Length: 364
Image (cartoon, rainbow, N blue to C red; front, side, top):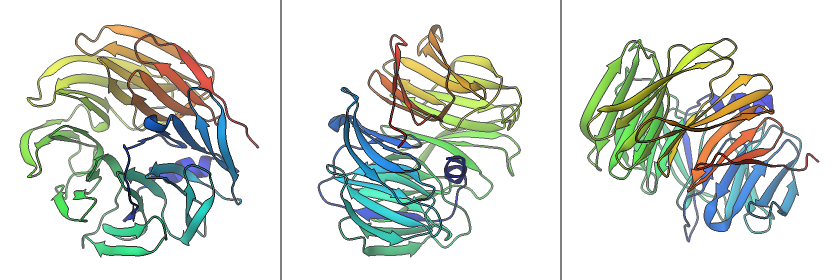
């Protein structure tokens, strides 16, 4: 599991797009799981199996044993579930209804994301984009953006995809915006017509926020803060945006995280909170849903904290302490939010009440 989690955080260089017909609503991706609210199904991968779970009943719909390997999160769209395994890497596709294997191809992909009728992944080529038919595994489109740089997937809303290097139309493969070369883009969000980008320390030596509007990517505003060098997470809902910044990169020692609620259209700050993090600050640590701002972190090697605030005021709504370490998420659909744990369990939290329960999975 450790190797799989580390590989997800290492951005390599390419996008793969898999085409399939009859696109459905976009599913929500965690780390080792993907939740499809319309189907009430969560797809979860472990070291030995891929399975589909009915979230409301907690029942296993199907379970498919996997060859030995280090697997990366499942992604789901339009009747297809895809995962990638270890070296030599293969991209494997399964029927989302039955778990029946459909095809697998050799690939150097180390990360996946899904978008409308597509599944996307990265491989070791600079800023490339490959389109593959999800039903057959055959390549439809293969192109490179022609610049050096690793591509990581940050945010999407069909057909728009925001990556660490550029924004692209996933259906056509057309480049929409290339971020400035001195930006190390680390987080992004999409809210209606707004495209929100955050950076980490690099050539800039401090974090930057930038908000664009519309398909032409008109710059609305930008802000740099030398005291907050790492923009670690952005969540947006309507005109509100929640930004998590860290004062330094730290994994095994204490540090401060700052939460800032802002107007996405003007950049005006609504409230801020400084939170001391005792152990680990995680990727995608924030969410906004139904007027609730949520932040989670690990506070020891064996436990985590999930905290919620009122969007308008910053007043704390609830706090949840877990006795298992959370490792990925945070994804929300309405009042239901999900985070993955190192124990192959999924924590479900009600965004309004803070009521929490575990979705446990068989380990064999």
